[in-house]
Amino acid sequence: MAKKLTRRHLLGLTVAAVGGVTAVATGAYLGTTADSQPDRPSADPPRTYRDRPYWEASYSGGPVDVKPLSPGRPGKDYTPVVVPTGYTLPWKIVDGVKVFHLIAEEVDHAFDAGLRAKSWGYNGHVNSTVMEAVEGERVRIYATNRLPVATSVHWHGIYLPNGMDGVGGLTQPYIKPGETAKYEFTLRQHGTFMFHSHHDEMTQMGMGLIGMFVIHPRNPAPEYHVDRDFAILLSEWDIPVGTARPNTLEMTDFNVLTMNGKVFPSTGPLICRTGDKVRIRLGNLGAMDHHPIHIHGYHFRVTATDGEDIPLSAQWPETTVLVGVGQTRTIEFITDAPGDWAFHCHMTHHVMNQMGHEFPNMVGVKPGELDEKIRPLLPGYMTMGHTGMDMGRMAEVMPMPANSIPMKGAVGPFGDYISMGGMFTIIKVRDRLKSYEKDPGWYQHPRGTVALKASAAELDRDGIDIYALTAKAVNGAPKDSASGPGSRGHVSPTPTPGHTHQ
Ligand SMILES: [Cu+2]
Image 1 (cartoon, rainbow, N blue to C red):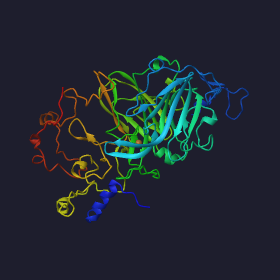
Image 2: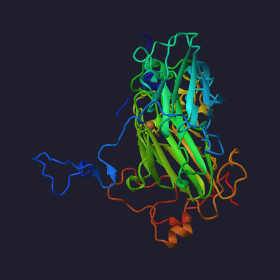
Image 3: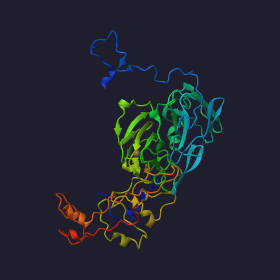
Image 4: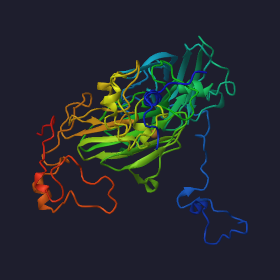
């Protein structure tokens, strides 16, 4: 089998071809009461721990044959979720039942302007279909298979009769190509759940057959109301550079990390007003990786899992929540600080765009005049990686392989590249916002609130010697500034181009 060719691999070949430098490089919940002894069975075991039953009546939503309630109405019974770059599956009401039609099919999906792949998805969308309902509703879901292979749909985390669980071969026959299956059950819970193919999962989920299923509570408490209720589904792909099919055999080396099927800068921003109550529902149906999703500028509370709501007394504050494969986590916070706040996976390889990992470690290598000497032989040659992998700009000077995207980023408000890609988006919080629908552009920072280059006067005022020797200096002072120690006065601050303040 041909070894896949990744960008890093290509770069490595270029370096190798010129004979260049190579790599150097709790027990409390057991409910023990004061008079019970651990080595003696109690005649009357504790029935409750504080005000909570020791065992709940049911872990499966209780009796299946509950009487369905009337369908919930968007805007009246719930505030619809917002799906950045995605959409909510339409439905209709037939005799009091909410009817959906899910269509599994091949989709020519764009992860970004530069990268497309023939993927599989639902109703023309990849990784970004959200089904939305209300607790107590009866739902009927028709699942049409337009794929060349059999499939099934599993309702992940949802209480239902066993035969509706969607495990191909176990709880139902396959949905064969051209067939339409009917799922029907009454929703006996609320929360953030998911759905996905449960037949040949490695292939079918890897090709994109995943989505989210949001169930709002019936008659929710006032605290449930939020101004913005976002849903983001995380996944990961291997799309070797220049190819047009996801490689679902990959087990570790994923090079396209997505939120709702997009990579930054194509992930949609989360647009909020200052002071909004915000909920973000995160789900992970990627193949192998758990994602620690991190927020800037705020902390949030983790308010629910795909099991149930977390009681207020048990919610905990975080700035990073780990969303494991197969899990959902719901977080809530108030956007009281305006700005463009990063919201991203904290695995550093997951905020890179398309790349492999076979590139030699060039960090610290000094290419000197190597590039100039090689260019007559290899036009456009550039030693890569010796200053890191900040390769957004690289795409401007180096031809990109067909159907591929730069490893990182997009030009930001200061004219510099935002050296992030993949599983990264921006929470845009504004004081005055006409509409949530329109991207408000870059945040205009109030004067004096941006970390700009320090002025000579500021350095002098605060006694900062930029040539001070540190105990373990390796490279010494920068060679291109002024004339050595003590010449602080020669440091001339330059205004940052391309950014104006209001
Ligand atoms: Cu990650």
